Image (cartoon, rainbow, N blue to C red; front, top):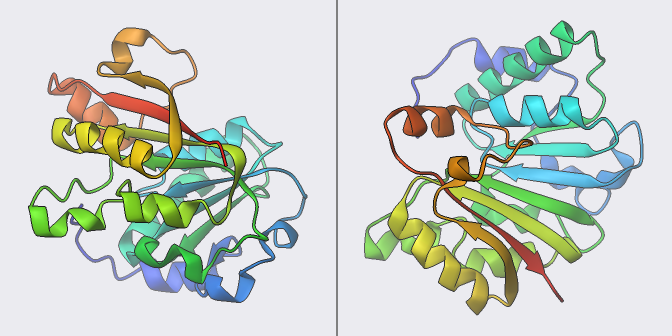
Length: 219
């Protein structure tokens, strides 16, 4: 997703106490970084933070890491989280926003960082053949996630892109994950706890069906 630069983003992030600019320093010890020791979920590609701000607020017994690479995105995510928690009169104590290239996710996480769940929401579909290995659900990426995703841990994936979804079904199976749930029309399922992202709302309003799956790392 392209986004225009925001001059305020970097200065605000540098002053933010729940932003991590050099996540490599926390590799192997993310469980000690949060105020409370509890299960960790991670969103790969948090965008503007609409999803992570809501799910983290709703689940104070879970710690969340929101990853993106672009300062402008992370700045908007910061503001969204602050606004959501302020309206709820809650302290921001269970979510961190992190600057990292997801293709190099093992630079910040290892087998000592036990992650219970991964969210991948509306990632870049990279439709051109030579770029498809950049997909966050590509077989090679899914292999990286197995380093830190606990056995029995799950990956929740949503997309509007038919080609990406069809390919991802194959990728998960190739990487040794078990697909335990899938749908080609998520909103028709009327799932009560589904949290819509900015992209999800936009695509749905355009009449595009949302595809989703849940895959489990069986070990």
